Length: 318
Image (cartoon, rainbow, N blue to C red; front, side, top):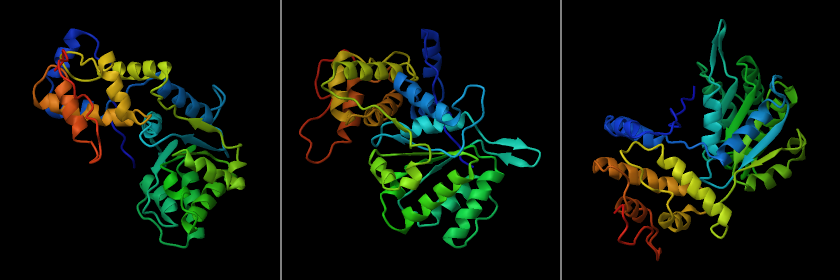
């Protein structure tokens, strides 16, 4: 049974709340930083897409037999959207056992041709996982999904299996098609945009609903709108962090550096912010400073890097 993070989504608004958060035990503050999740407009838009894919009619029932995709670059926030969605629809204990309204699994590069079927057993807390032929375990995994009341099957990091043109992809896609054909749930595949081409090479899958494509937005450093979007995101993250003072992450003097490291996504800036926040907690600092950001960024530079983000002096937060 997958255990999701206790996402930190509630802004710390008042000075009193900030002071209280800053005095919490280090382990609690560390968890608040590690599991921070700012529900930006982009996040909420993709969350709405998934809700609509799952329940297309308000007040209706879960849709069945459709295959859809959530596409985005690495570190674009796909997994946060999916895990947050799944965490709000946890397993439900019934008189006969557990129901899993939404089942979330993560594909891995080390999977073999039967791993997806076995992962379904493992994710539904099966006492034993059968060791049978690929065709048999696919059939039994589908039966397991039906028995456990699954209404939406989410396969994250689907590029790990779709990039393989061999037996592993063939067997996994056969299972997905079989589940769709049984028409008891929808299937959402999430991964790098390159999986779109791979899916289009499998018309029997693409035809299950026309393959709805939900896309994570990128950040373009040449776009004024995207600069504002990134600043909005950074301001939102700042308000979630357990410090006595705001760190000014979304201020103009930081934006160019965050754009330099973001690679078009939010995940790379969050790597630096998380590490900088840990430095600040260890220093008992009232906020994340320029020095904390510089140190966190420097540790993540490649050998051929010719620019150190946050490497200037004279900042008021230094």
